[in-house]
Length: 169
Image 1 (tube, helix red, strand yellow):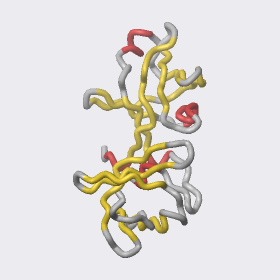
Image 2 (cartoon, one colour; image 1 turned 120 degrees about the vertical axis):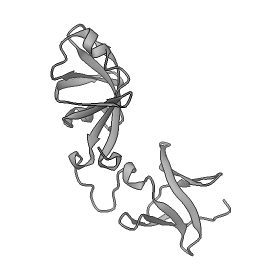
Image 3 (cartoon, one colour; image 1 turned 60 degrees about the horizontal axis):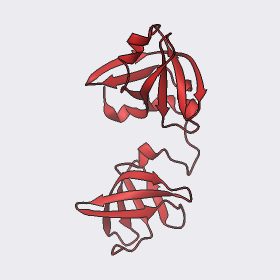
């Protein structure tokens, strides 16, 4: 199982009822979209298990899911803490100019003049706009993800992002 083929879509955070349903903290938007991706690859303590999603629904901030073969609360409890991985190929193709965060993580970032700023470590959702967290050794830069204003070019094949950003900032 190559980690580059999978995305972490959520985590099993609890159980719901006595029939083996699980509570899920979903990273998808909207949260209930995680139910559309089946099978899930559950990973916990370096053990991996593939399981089909039978059904589910949103329940407040969580999602409740019914999983194939899980019909008992005790069995569901054993799944708590499992990461929910899905194959990247299960996701719809992004529109031109749209990117999944997972595709941006790891890109090298440089200015228009070729000054290397580091590598995208992760992104933050701030409400106004997403922010790239770019690491270069001990230096951390927070760069707004504003396409055509600050982010000028993204080349996924080359692993490169070009930005209009002051290297001293």
